[in-house]
Image (cartoon, rainbow, N blue to C red):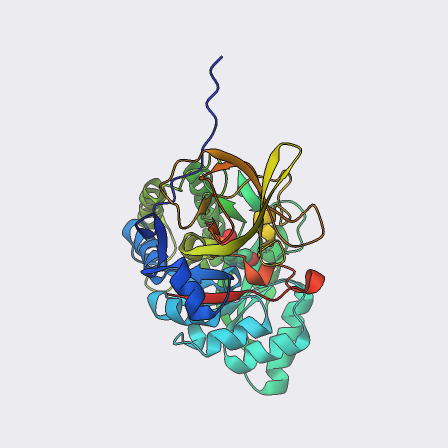
Length: 411
Ligand SMILES: *Cc1c(COP(=O)(O)O)cnc(C)c1O
């Protein structure tokens, strides 16, 4: 039987020149010279713009786009994206402060995240951002904070729906979950809530992340609309906003292909045409993190040694899992798989040499690529990991083993 080995999606989002990968028009030696560093993350503005344009091309107009900052909280990135989207979603006080210093209005910032501290809730109330309430205790705390501060808290309920997002990299709803308030319980709370003590905004229905199947997202959107309609019906005051969640994935591993937004957009058009929600009064939002930024980022590190162990070749690099935990396979993966990688100064040379790529940490977990064919590489060449613009430096244990922290640049 002829088995076809799954390949990585083609990484064609960046420009190149004479076999050199370009980020924002600069090759890796130039970026390295600019930073004075042999290891860095570089993010390309044009690729971020292209991802936002792809969203706007397919997703029907009344639906707003928010950026979930946690995917890439680099201040230059967040400030670049802020005027290109309709709002920002934050998940901590630090992210809240970052969002408030961008061009985005506080009205278009929402704060989600379980186990919020009282001080975080107070900061959100002071700032006038929407607090996505994750529990009944949190609701009480927000109301109390509002009374203390003489400011009505802007409240949206994060709903834990009864359904789940199928085929998701990360399921965040359906069944018992630490996120949000169960849909069944919310049905009891809504008619009895003291709406006078809050500024009621609406609902946040987020069910999962990293999904590459349009059918699964369509199914989730259908169920999200029905649930939203039911909740809006039960709310005796106007509902200003319904956050439909996000979950648009990007291809990381062999066999994965870019998400097709066309059928998702077509289905949303149908849902908008049929919905009982008054779209003049209620805005609908989709919140995306990695979809906007992951494709735009690379992690680049110089090869510092090349050795052979019992017949296998190892490229040793100055970068490692302390900068890029998810590429090492230790951030939510069950079996380690290779990200798409390249030798950044030999892009079109034939992949003739099977190698393993490892970093400077004294642990076998510090693997950047396993048994992969690359162009013949030498000390001083650039090892590049694609799809690295999300969950990079801030999702990695940078102080583990005490090597220097990683630099980032938006070009
Ligand atoms: C993490 C998170 C996101 C972003 O997820 P991505 O997979 O990066 O798009 C969006 N919304 C909420 C509530 C989240 O927790």
